[in-house]
Length: 463
Image (tube, rainbow, N blue to C red; front, side, top):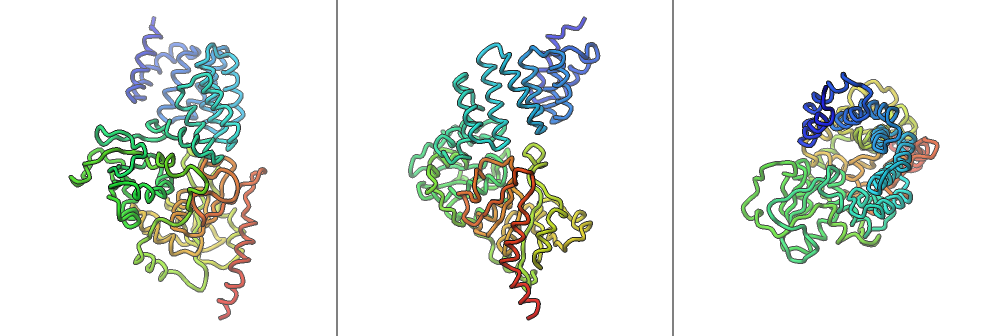
């Protein structure tokens, strides 16, 4: 008879080695032998999760709780999979059940910590903070609880606690850590040579780059390791720094002079030193587009109408993309409010969708948005009169350029958008929040467009 425990240990070794397919080859025969064994069902859920097959993992986890309803770990796994699928009621119920039957403080801490993360996802910042603090009382060294606390505090503009928590998750899968030698993490010392590197998505990198001028002023030299798509834009915008687009490169082709440094730090890590009060956020433009490309873009536009950039989707499946999207039909009130030159700022090819839509003529400039050089996109955005977008990276780009932007934020928003109709990072960005009934204030934005451009469009049309 198969030794289930030994086989599960073997599967775990494959998972630890990031070989989920090999782990599944161990789990599958065990399921065939006994598809009701809760230990195997839980392992199957974990393997499917690591393979990013969350819907399948959810099914295994749900079956596990039915077969082992008195095991805290079964409910915890089911809650996590429900959480990842945005089945919030199921997730909360499962976490609370796991907490109720948890046999020790460590497992109770995990359940409370996951509740905190759930409330973060839902934008319930106060609840997220409360549960993160409870988790830390149970398990003071829980790095994820510290991270959840950080995000909850940042959303509420409790900056110092927020940045401390943010630092706790650097080095996790959520925030990639990188070392360039044996250097320490920069701790605020003056007149040092410091490497700053991006640790997450491009929107975060653009936003956190607002702190580079502060670091440059305090340092002997700053070396920036950024996404390759941002290299040209950052070189122009921060000429005092040495810029490399090697963030994801294994081998570095840096000049010898840039291989001598004192410390390194993530871009987000700079917040602890430069953004501790609301007054520390200047909110002014800090990225400089290519003037020649801006001139080119403006020459393409029909200046008899305002040129307005639009982006109607944002995010990935695991960052809430299902909540960050409109159809073009939903945007019809905007298109009908004024006569405008509508420009797609979608970062993926939207030509088929635009061709099928008959409510407005929308232009996609492929060489401006479907490009590996974000300098192209920056120049396009800088040449527009206004940007209207779903919560996505282009909102950060517009804010960094000082371009007026109306960004629509779902109820399940990111910490950076907090509460209210503005965010401290950019003075040019206005936030429109999804209503509690799930509707979007596109009607409100349409009225504002009419007030601003309606008369102008009429005058230009008859001139």
